Length: 247
Length: 284
Image (cartoon, rainbow over all chains, first blue to last red; front, side):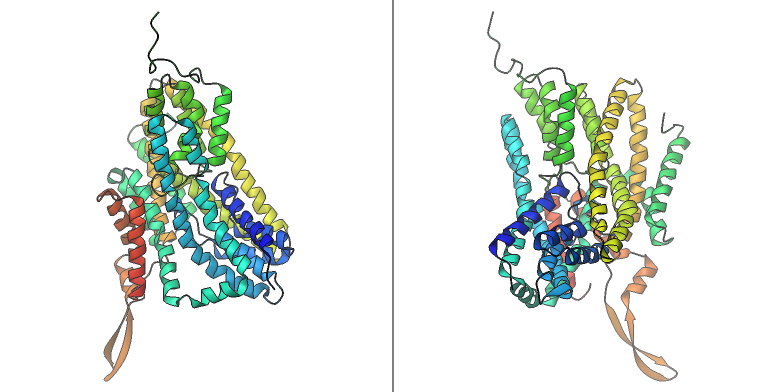
């Protein structure tokens, strides 16, 4: 059994809305638990939705788009996993078997979406040079098209084609390719950190970065502890220089 | 009376910044900041669009407007929920007081440290706690799990409103103060130090998965018997410097960005190629 074109369209719109709700207003609808729940209500099986969503949420603990880094797209994973998991004969295990690889594959489309939007800021550059405020607004407000479509189109196709072709496609992908993509995902946060560091006066304040590193790498301090030490170090540094922070 | 030239005539929007303009700018920022997020300048276009209600008021001529818009098209990226509303509020205050350039340096100085602080609060302090609670409720069959998460998201959205007005008041206060420069420098310095400390810890914790699988087979003689022994490379690396690979990869990306002036998009490409090469060569 599969879904019709109407359900494929509805879930594609859901994927678009979830991405946008997180991108703009920071509503966190990309959390797999929320996306799975909403999908569950739409396909008429809330239990599968929240179970798959919760499982993926626990898998994604500690993952965050630091500085705009790409992480596995567990939102799309939750939508597809729930949609297929709710089908008779597929079930929870089958749904999860689709959800996890789909989340990993989607990292490639996240990169594509983030890269395509670069064209929009070049459009805005030209509009600004002309002093064309309307065009500037248009480029910004249409900027979510690559973001939404890179999620909506795969969801539409996958739900429309059904679980079997998706599973076949994932099985067909060589394991070495999946491994390479997993490694890429693990390496991409480096770009976020590098961007962050390139904005800071590292040459002047590098010892504080070393302190943070040592606290984690050697002393195994949790991040909250490192943040507290950093606050204390900042205040002390300024006080020793003869100033006060509150001034 | 001579007709004024096109460039000297004041634009229709020119005038004092009203409370309604500020409120409009705030909602634009709070709802759409990242709609046009891209690898090259990240949140820059969203920042400009959100700022337009204020910029249009303070720009007298079309040339002013273009110059003011261009100032905001430079790279900008920080945590959109915790931090950016403060920066944006302060920046609006600077624009209103015709101190746009001071506002620009404040923006650049604060975005990095506040990204570090905001990401720490969201991703490390609060999200794991809420996620574990919500997921365990959901796994026991209760829809209160996802509902808790939805409410949590709503909280982040609404929390941006007081941040904006706080930032705005701070911005106005800084402009008024004679010693504003000195105080601003100290706040920026403190934020930078905190940011760097946190990033120093972040790099190894987030990228801990980057380890090598390389192993050497060596024959060793134990009690007069020659045996094959497999030696893993990773423990050796850990003894030299723990988390050496994450540090090297970040260092490589930083070097490309800063010293080789490569665009973030190119760096992304190099990192992807590097990951594929290392994976297929069975190094990682």
